[in-house]
Image 1 (cartoon, rainbow, N blue to C red):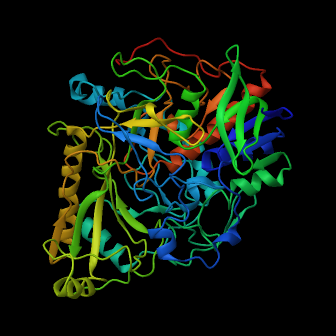
Image 2: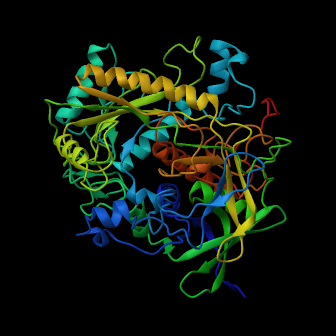
Image 3: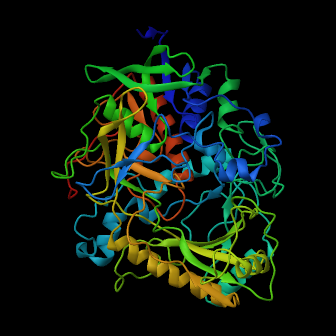
Length: 582
């Protein structure tokens, strides 16, 4: 039997950027907040002395184990979905700080086009440009409306960067100067300029200098140690919740953080959430945490599954195309991050040093910055060259056609170890009627609850945009002077890998309750004291990582929750009549 605890103002599920921001902002405002994290507690000291490639990059020390809980995956409706069991195929974050603790640190704002994608596409090309079955829509908020929240997140995170020459307007500069460009990045930028493109030093969550944010949290200058992606930063120089919003929340004295607390249901009555039910994963004891406001701020998969298991909202039905929970599933699949690799016989690059957000980028082929009239896709992608810092085990590039073992492989892998550069196209991904999330009818977790099932099929749009990007990357690599250029191959179909954990949708925002689950404060249309914050709110996937957009929307959600509590309830925005095709 669940033990009922004392009621608080707000209970927050999840401790990543989304949950951390909401908890920090509301606890600063004087509300009593409880943050629940399914994983264990951790501190910065836990990362000292663990720059171990085998342990973290190959054996996924910081990634959730998939034995007791996972997802199932299939390509088409009617297929049997199977559980994803290998960590290399799904890098779900866990423990205090969530997946944000092992992120690389690349930072991009999404484009003004993204927020009004349907109306802007129709305005320029006509409605016929949108393929049948593509479920794009305007978000119910514009870039200009969200811009102050982008700026606030960048100040909190201490982002290092220079503005994109083709970017939308900004209210201020990045709080820190851009990171220094390595020889490889300089070559990329110089070559791109020769082609008439507009490269720039990409913005980064890795600190270019020591920085103290507006909440008084200090981050240290990056040392280019290369251990960013899949690692926690032991030096405190990577923007993450444990370096920023979590200590800010704790300092208020108003935020209690409980780890090892797996939330399994949202409790509700008479159309309002009354709290959450969670299990202490160490003891098995169940607890009921009552609250005036419930905030689901976990990963996309968890937010969707919690709503479904709690019988909140209508689960999307692909046959009728009705329902909003689980709808508009998108993310970065095996058709994204494709490009070209150059092998240089006369140039060497020091790829031992690096950082997750160290790179050069350009946006000439992003969003609708180029004419799509005669192209067989909409939107676009950003082009990058990143210097992560290649370690010895996971990086062993040789030209195509080289045997995978033996004398020739050894010879070429040694020769090209520091003579290889990759340029890739990070493509946007659109939502389709046949790509969605629901509950699996067969497989269950260790508590007997149904697993979340993903149905996802690559489309001509995905393949066409990837093919376009690969060719543009190859042009840049050729201009860089590569002696051998290997182009990535287009996949035939989705391969059930969820490697980057950039997956969104299912509780998507909008103006019409018929096609969206939450409003632009991320407040559930049909349950006004339930806010669902995080990547689950994004209606489609823009051309780059979603972290800044998630952070910006979390700040807006926190503002909305404060307003809701002060005004004693009510919807913060009013729904508009249905005007979007299913």
